[in-house]
Image 1 (cartoon, rainbow, N blue to C red):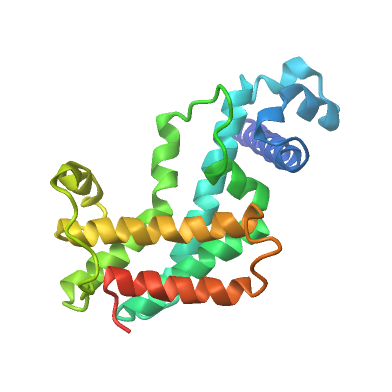
Image 2 (cartoon, rainbow, N blue to C red; image 1 turned 180 degrees about the horizontal axis):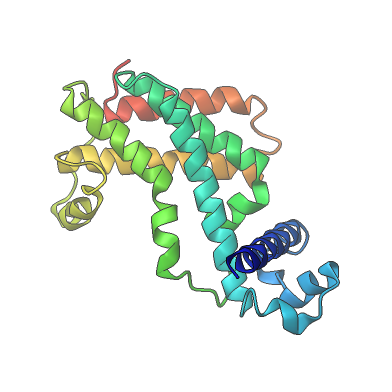
Length: 232
């Protein structure tokens, strides 16, 4: 009985893997809003009613793709951070930034699903929250580690954050323990700046303007590291 159940579980896992692989290809041709369970079923040679045993709705399939995407970029970022010496805070930041860009360029349609325009009518469930913060948590650890080591020295070029942001800073502080509000708000600027650069490159805003994109990316990541206060 156990062997039979294990065999069924393997078959189910393989079918789910095939469904999500086909769905990712659909993202490239139809976009997230055009994702169709019926179209996936047709490509698999499966009756449309059968696919609902694995994904009851299009939104369930979208959620699976989103969770897979967040976990994939999270794993890439974690590997990049893990390849660096723990006290090389600036090196860790650059490694993490490069990992985000490289993953996005290698998986543009999945990146667009995660960080592009919202899918009309879709609302991400709580299941997506933990995978979504895997990469952010790594960046938070870099800033927190540098702060604890006394190596974080933000330059005096930004005004203090307005008091109204204190509540938001407290939420983010779970990722950057013990950091003051000024450090937290600078970290938010840096992290969103990273994704802004990647999105501009991926979605065509640099077309006919920026040729040396890798070099511009490296320079901007250095500027953002300095803004946060990471050592030179």
